[in-house]
Image 1 (cartoon, rainbow, N blue to C red):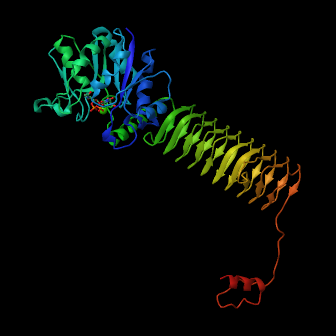
Image 2 (image 1 turned 90 degrees about the vertical axis):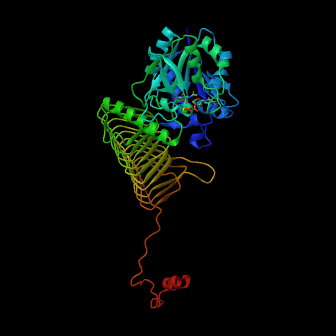
Image 3 (image 1 turned 180 degrees about the horizontal axis):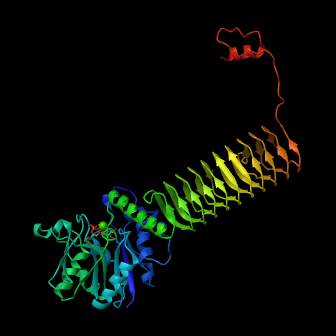
Length: 469
Ligand code: UD1
Ligand code: CA
């Protein structure tokens, strides 16, 4: 029997109060639908089926996979109706694994257990005992412990409200049975929907045993229907990731104050301070310290480097033993070699910074190539944009740029040259030179600053100041 995944994703998700389809809301930066498909992925070779509503194009472009059988459920008439739309794709010999796409925390191991049981007994359901069972279908067992019926929250009789075991919505059963039972469902219930859960009563009436598999951690079996549950699921997921990092030897100063929205791979003796967000693929080498309040996306940080507080790094390579921050913004295409220093209020974009070079304060370096041991003084700007095109600045090895300088690209400064403070470099500079374009300094002895009563009017520039007022 081969397993066929059916992910239900057509529900309107009214309780989310959002224009975005419910299953595209994210946990750790990844849509709930993608979580569910990724979790179930290892269980079968067969293409998964996803049931979508009229917003299917949004789902297709978000998931972006060519191997999915997308099936439209034009009207959302319930979970049973949703599965019914897929039966033409099922072989009788398939084992259907039906998943709700609003269950992002479910784990592969639990799904595997469910499938193994269904292979033996033909129909099994994952159940959960949630902290608050409101909204879930209650599982009524028979004297042998099999599931006799599932009763939805709005159809509960008072005597059934004490039942704590609930349906996760995840079923594994033979496709031949689905084909037999789905056409028999009706809408005689509180929500006037075709409930998939009514297949259980049909199974019992035919003497088919429906085995419950209880997930031990109730959080794993939670469905996400509103923003409160979404936020809760996010925290649960983040805590799990934090625990995995700590088990791998990472020091998290506070495991509840780190968020990983993607993949984070850390070497040995990495310390991550509070309020750090990792996005996309981030790789961190041995002995790296990431200070508080950093946002690091799709970047590699090599061993023994330090990212001080309050930096934003996106698509950046940081060589070993480098120091970044506090308050640095490193944008896409920034590559720092080893032992570099990038400091306070520095923005770097699409630039390579050679070994041992320093950009310590208040600078913008864009579209640039800096050799090794270059020193950039405070307030230096590469003027890379002429209003239409971007141009490159090249500073060769051992260049020293004095503070408050402008490098008007395209421009190259040769190795060992010095740019005097306040210089605007507009032409290429040979190596081993001093270049200064500063206005020469004037001295006006006895000059007094303007005052309100005009007593300074004897001096020409003071008069000017006065008339300007
Ligand atoms: C469902 C179950 C309930 C279970 C709970 C677990 C039914 C009738 N109820 O209730 O027993 O305890 O999940 O979280 O099955 N969907 C469609 N088309 C539809 C309706 C729903 O594709 O016409 C999809 C939704 O996108 C969602 C899933 O089916 O992914 C479940 O639907 P939802 O409305 O969230 O069901 P619940 O009320 O949570
Ligand atoms: Ca649900």
